[in-house]
Length: 97
Image (cartoon, rainbow, N blue to C red; front, side, top):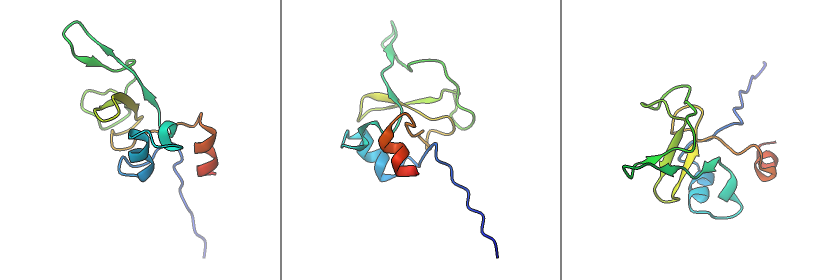
């Protein structure tokens, strides 16, 4: 018997403990995901840090979702329920390898 295992090391569920800890800035998870500040336009509306598009899922096509608790935007290449891990973080790379 052969077993094939698919590993997707670029994101997790938004319900993962790491993501909750990252939202709440609990170390070492604070930078486990891609977070960024955005802008506030002239109308007082929050705007994402750039115009990157999500591949699927999010209605307006943005690859960014604002988190009220953290006060920042998180990046998701796919659906907003799948936040991207920060693969520039040595801690994240060590965890997934």
